[in-house]
Every structure is written in structure tokens, then in C-alpha cells.
Image 1 (spheres, rainbow, N blue to C red):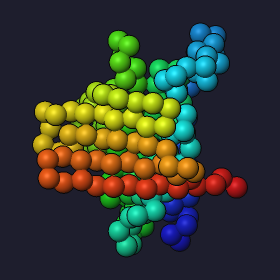
Image 2: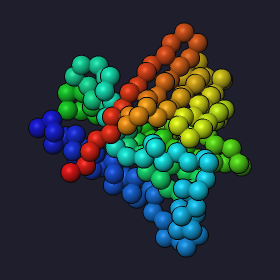
Image 3: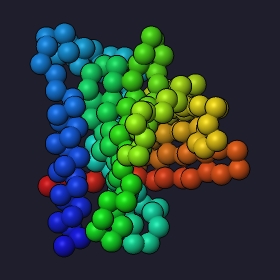
Length: 167
């Protein structure tokens, strides 16, 4: 039963992201071909990920898709006792030549913006110092895994995700 719920949530998330990331124009196809040439490439985020270091009886997932050369879309969700207890939409988007990480928890009407303050081909850091928590969100590539750190003044939460292999 647990596998069915997880599989169902994954399918729902994939369908959601597919509907959000439809590219039909020739311009979008051209932009997608140019992405791999860019130094602002976050393709290492792409895929289905499961958190390794989650609390007992919980499972957390992130699913990332590329919309075009200036936007990546994601969804994150946590399941406990076969019930989704947390869900958020995530976007990494380039606005006015600057990258912004937008996070929209399920109970928030608008996304919360974090400005990218540094990045390279294996990591990025985004900040919003106006918030109590988190003030900083960092993602980085760790061999075949990805890690994330969410931190504020006196608190930080570490995430380690491994890729879910699709069969």
C-alpha cells in the first residue's frame, strides 16, 4: 500500500510538472538547445529525488524539470503514514539577468523569493535576509546525490537526496 501511495504521488507530481512545463514554440526549442552551452546550467537538479536523511516514518521527495533555459520547476512533498503532510512548488527562474529561487508552500498564496547570491556548475546559494527562517537556501551536487541546506539565524536543516531510478 505504501508503495502505491508513493507511486501515485510521484505520478501526480510528474503530471503536474508536465502540464506546467509544456514547450510548443520554436523559440522554446531553440532555447532548450542552447541551455547546455550556458555556464548557468542547473541540469544536475533534474530528476526524481528521495531524501536519505529523513525522520523515521517519513519520506520526502523532490522532482525537478527544466522548463526552458531560464526556468527550472520543481515540486517537493513529504509523506507520513501514507498521507502527504507537506508540499511546495519550487522554481529556479532567471528574472532581469538574475536568478531567483521561488518557493511556494501549500499554505501560502504567493511564492517566497530568494535571490541567488552565488553559483557555479555544482552549487548555488539563494538568500532572503528579510525572513526569520529560512534566510539562506543552498543546493549542491555531491557525486550522484544532491544536498540542500536551509538555514536561519540559529537553525539549519540539512537534506541529502539520492536519485530515484525509474524502471
